[in-house]
Length: 254
Image (cartoon, rainbow, N blue to C red; front, side):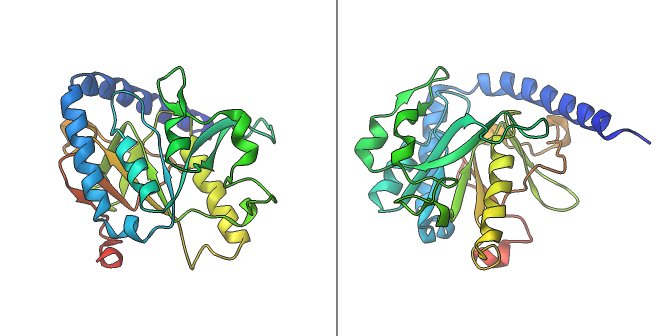
């Protein structure tokens, strides 16, 4: 019998190899193409029912290259009156050898001016000032004046390095950057929903946003390896205008 940690080490090695392959592939995507594709995704999203129906939306803030640029999406969501939450990384308040040292929360933007005041971090990603976090509504905060302990998201727009479709199950698979921030956040969010009795009535929806080059469509391009903690997606919006929905969800989105 293969020990679990050996299996995990093998899985991580395969994931890392695909990340290296994708790094070269995405390095060939021009800035102009990324901007056009980002605009296409933003326009698709505006007419997408799960987005239209969502009151509370989590939107990732983009790196300068290699992925969909979400600036226009954040601005549209704020202008549309949605409650917009963005990632905030911090040390795990409950350190344990079995848990990540750093974790992700989602904190709410106050308005467009607040968003435009965010400063880029060392990767060029707009980031929330840690000194303002205690003043904001956040998914894993509270009890506080913002009733953070009662807040759940309706929709999470998820980044990734690569995506594909499992040929057997039809599930949409996602390869992240390797830190596990989203998978761990989603598990915690689901646990909170269960504790509030809302997991069945209003489950959070997970949709990926991707450049077309991030979508692997043939075995020659590779396949996204997944483990037991990797979360399948409810759908994927691509830079060519396509919307990929798993067969298990198609009737629910029509």
